[in-house]
Each structure stands twice: as structure tokens, then as C-alpha cells.
Image (cartoon, helix red, strand yellow):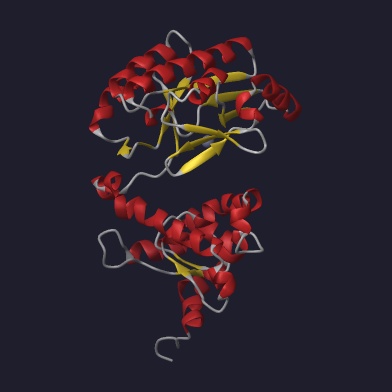
Length: 329
Ligand SMILES: [Zn+2]
């Protein structure tokens, strides 16, 4: 039994509304005949599977996928003026409910007019109640407003009452405004900025053109070891990602070094699996409040590697990389 919880569908009536121009999303049609949905910072190509539920049903049958939980994807309805967002969210959810009601291979997450929190509460209640949808998809920020903003408290209250499933989907990243609370800037923003920096350098071909530079990434490379496979998929999918490099990004990223300032032995193990024990360097972030020499030592002691690899990570790799002599030698 395969149930696919992350996939996207633009219902026909939604596409018609956009094409009519009553939306802040601009639609153009490409040479391939597929519509493009343009919104600030990005666009989506709506291929047949995005738009044609019957075709999609055949694809799922051929692929052996028993059930897909449909959701709308970016840009979402919250990029519209609030009143229009409410109308479009209702329309989309009606179409979702209809598809799910008529075809056994589909269920759907509700979409919500997130730029109108009060209306989002009403739509959540309608979608999970009257329309019997099993949950809702949220976006990771709403026109730059973080989900932890207090305006969403009533939505969480309502969702809690319903025992709702809320699936958070990414969208254009918010600005630093959304990272001001809870130290989110250094806890999360810094790591994603490292990830962006490394990915950008690799796609721009900088490590390819200057192969003698040895790069070191902080904090286990942000999310690089965890998501390098997605960068490789981008390389295969988009011509722009192949313009400056002739091998998948992970080939270059594996040559980077990764410091261990992220003290979870399992995350460390992933970095070792990704880049090899010879490319992992001990680090503590001492004396920051969030740094820890103890954390560094304990996580390296718990890391599942051979003793020789552990010694290399603890110090041997750094000595070699930086051309340093061992202390006392
Ligand atoms: Zn998605």
C-alpha cells in the first residue's frame, strides 16, 4: 500500500480563475503548451499531471500508488488580496473534495487563505467538517509573516480542537524578520545560509574552476549532507544548474570539509557517510553560549566510526588539512 502525502494539483476551476486575470498570479503559456504560474521570485510550470486528474489517476495506477493526498502548491492563495484569497481557497477546497469524493485514489489537504487568519479558521472548520478533508497544508511563511506570529493563535486553537493534521510546505523563504524571535537567526537562519552559500558556489562552478581551494563548511554544512540528493536532482532537471558544472553538485560537495558543530552523533554519521571520515573536522563553537567543548567531545565519542576514523576527526584531519604539526611535536 503506497500513500503519497506530498504531491500537488491545480484544480481546473482554479486555473480558469487565474487565466481570467482575477489574481495576483500571472499566467503565461510556454512553447510546450503548459501554463506558467508567475509570482514574486519564482514560477511553476503546470504540466498535465498538475491539471488533469483523470490522466493522473492512470499514472498512479501504472506506478502502483494507491492513494495521493493532493494539495495546492506555491504560490498558494495567500498571495491574493485577502477577500480574493478566501474565494479561491473555498473554490479549491470544493474541487479537492469533489475529486476525493469521486475517485478512490485521492484525498486532499485543504488550502487556507492564510493572509486572513480569521477566514482561515472558518475555512479549516468547513474543510475538515463539511468537506471531510483529512487535514490542511500550510506554507512555511505567509507573505513574510512567520507561522509563530500571534495572529495565528486562533488558527492553532481551532486546529487543536479538530485534532487537525497540518502539513507545512515550503515557499519563498521569509526575510530575517521571521528569524528575530527565539534566536531563530543563529539556530536556523545561519545553517540555511551556509547551505545556500555552498549550493550557490557549486552551481556557479567556483569549486570546479578553482579545484585547489579546500572549503570548510560550518555546522556539518547546514543541511548539505541531508539534502545533497535534491541538489543533484536539480542538476538533472534544470539546464541552468548544468551551465557551470559538468558533474552533479554532490561530487563537488563531497570534497568540502564539514566541521562538527552540531552535536548529534547521528547527524555526524550522515556527514561521515556523505563526505567520508577524512573530511569531517572537530569543532566546538566555544565559548558561545550555544557552543560546547563537552558536546564536541561527547558526540565524537558516541559517533559510530572506527577508532582510526575517530582519531582523524578529532584532530588528524585538521592537522593534515591545515599543514599543522601536532602539539608538542
Ligand atoms: Zn511540494
